[in-house]
Length: 370
Image (cartoon, rainbow, N blue to C red; front, side, top):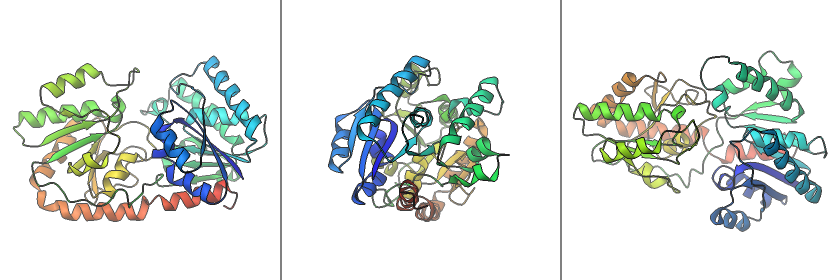
């Protein structure tokens, strides 16, 4: 069977889809990946597992018609050459492009919704949000299967729909991680380190994290606050100058982009993601919990479905710095609770985040055995 997988940045195929792609190839399928911004490390990985790669150079941040038509033409050219039997598309723009390609070529389409992004962030039902929701509902009618990573996204897009539409929708609790790669590690015994590990977006709660760090420092806390992640130069990103200023003032320790997150997770005691972004299920939460690190996050889509408050982490209201500080201070005063929390986190990861489980389900869907 010929399988095309359409994503965004080339590195996401290794980090997010690597185990699934390897499984599909080992099952005897021909697998083609289509993405953008190729890099040598990712290309080497794809080649090593027997996956062909095409780069179409589209910008996921652009939504203009010319960018869309350019992406569509490139994909149609690839499809005319490889004639796929099935296509898995993840992230919203690849899903839209793949849907239009389906009008020209007869293939089965599986759409993987990895969160709904900035348009659906916040509670206001704006005109743009109404339009995008309506557009996505039309687009997803053409998918043979739709996979969501949390129930809130399913309800947003399919609430009130007929049973026929709902039958093709599946909710998975995350895409999973390799539990052998992200092993349970001993908790550091120095001062408590709180870790922010994500893209440097406002909606990921980075400003709230830094404000909490600043106020904790004012209270002469011995805790440290680490930030790792890729800067975002869009209007949604946190100003890099502000990050540098906070780093120079020792409010935070900014380590930039890290390719192997295990080292920074090992050096931390707690992962903090005070997000109000429409997540699927953040990978950093899955990675941290697999390594036995409790999580502080918010009562927002994706995050609060897995985190059990005060068992394997803590849930705080979004945009509420005082609540965030309260939980941080609790951790600083209750270091003896870390072993129990770490054990509960690992158990949660083993139950929900083992990548072999979603990979098996997704491969069955792709091969039509669901």
